[in-house]
Every structure is written in C-alpha cells, then in structure tokens.
Image (cartoon, rainbow, N blue to C red; front, side):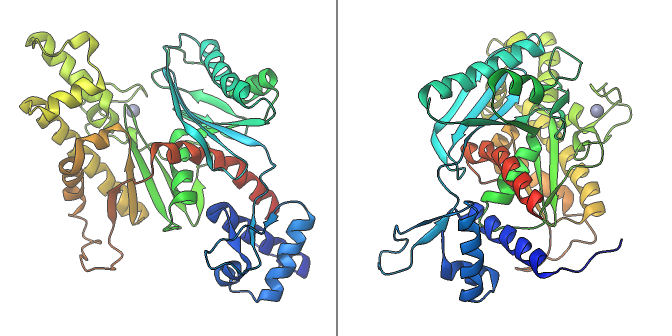
Length: 398
Ligand SMILES: [Zn+2]
C-alpha cells in the first residue's frame, strides 16, 4: 500500500495524539515527564502542550506532583468532560463501574442479577441501572460503555448473538439505548473490554498480548501492535469454538466438541449435573448447581470434579498450544471465574504449552510465552470498556 509522507501539520497531529495517549494512561504528567516519554525537547513539548490547551483538550494544574514542591505543575485530561458508566452485560447480570472524565473510578463497582426473558427486559435493566447513577449525580453527563457477552458489531452497536440469552435475534443496543437515555452509548464484546483494560491500565504497557476469559463460555481477544484485533466480521478470538473433540457433545454454535463444551464452567456444570442425577449427593442439588457450589465441591476434594477440572485445563492448554504456534504472541492473561481453580489449574494449562518446540527457552528475559492470571481488579476490568471512547477520539486524530 502507498503511504504518504508526513508534512509539518501531520507531524503535529501525530504528536498530539501521542501526548493524549500518555495522558490517558498516566492521568497526570509534568512537562519533564512528557519530554522523557516522547524523547522531544522541552520547547517542542511546550508547543504541543500549548496547542492542546488552546483546543481545550487538556488542562494545566498547579497541584504539586512531588512532595518537593517547586515545579511547573502538571497536565491532564480536563475534569470537566462527560463521565462514563462502564458495564459488563450478560443476559442475567450487570456489573458496573462509574468513571469520571479521566476514566478514574467514582465509588465502588455495582452488581445486579436478574433473568432477562427478552432483549426488552435486558434493556430495561440497563436503563434502570444507568438512571440509578444519574439520580446520584444529576448535574453530570454520564455516557454508557458496555462490554457485552457474545458477538458484537462495535460500529453499528448491535449485539449480534448473546449465548445463554433466551433470544436468538440481534439487538440494536446502541440505537435503542441512545434514543431512550439521550446520552452516547458504545459497546463491544466483553473480551475486548478485558483487552482494553490491560492495554490502558497495565503499567507494563505491552504492545502484543492476548486475554482469555474462561467463564461460562470461553472467549479471547488479542492486541497486536497496540490495536485490538477484531477481525473483519468481529468474529476473531472465538477460541471457545476451536474443535478439540470431533466426536464430542453438541455446542451452541452448531458444531460438535468445541473447547467450550469441554472446558467452560457451563460444561463442567453440565457434566456434574448429569453425574449427580445418577449418583445423588445430598450436598449438591443437580438442578440448582451454581458456580460457587461447584467450586466449593472442588475445593472440598471431590475427586470426580477435580478430574473434570483437570481435563478442562488440559483442553484449554491444548487449544492455546495450537493458537500460540500460529500467532506467536508471548503474553497471555487469563481472566474469568475459572481462575478460581487456582495455581494447579494454571500449571496444567502451562504444562500443555511446555511442549511447544519453538518456545523452549526458560532463561530469564527470554521471549518465551508467559501465561499468567490477569492482575487487574474487577473494577479495572470493567473500566476497560470506557476506553472505547478514548480510542475513537485518538483514531479520529490519527
Ligand atoms: Zn462451538
């Protein structure tokens, strides 16, 4: 592809986007820190900052960043901008975190459970949740950012399929909620939410990594050269539907033996339910088997459940092995409630990947693949989806 060169105006624009990126990540920076981060001279930094101030896109504060006093103050994203209510949406729950104009949390995360029979009922719950915050901060404009379970078209804001939902039709979430609430709404898949959370809030600032969410389904999202890779039909990251056992059980997607049918929490629950119906256990009711009851039984040393969990970890490991050989991404963060299975579960996954012939180097500082539990708090995970607004602003810039 032909790439045009950069004239002075274009260079300025790119530099402004770089400054804004640093300010969104660090929230507050001194002039000297910006010079250090960008490798530009102080006069050049001053020019760019002045321009951003004139455009009202950043603000200056004389609040001292260091205890030693004397400095020229710091720069930040203006606090006067709209707030964002970030939510993680499934057909049965909303988790939320309110954030101010700099995407710093306001208050504690919220959680609401329900059982939506229809898209309408789900949207009612989202609207009601938003109104609850709106009442608390009536003077504040509060936009919505939704990390939605299942396949999402982030451009049109349509939830295309929501596994575990009782409906099979697409839902025009963005359009319907914007019309109802009169604020801006943006949405994307919940694994994209986790990828954005890592990208913007992990101090390591890795440019290439993958997040895998092992919960009642299994999803993933990868960031390549700082960009979330969505795929042309927004179907990338469907690691849960890689086939691990062609003779296995039927999956929601219409195929057989997908990873999800073996290794997700819903698969484990299903296995346990079937077993409990033939072998009643007074401690576990097969028809009301919750994730916490399953975890409880596993922790209590239930040999059968432990074997299934290990089998699940093996399947996740094997899929990751295939996936890593193709992509050669060397950091994977695991999220989701399956992480409660702990270090042993993680090590079973890692053992499968240890066979990778291209990835044998154990020496410190090597580029060997690292698979670890994600370290962001739940509030930080949910805040990730708020960065949809930041990225769209920065993309307009670049
Ligand atoms: Zn499938």
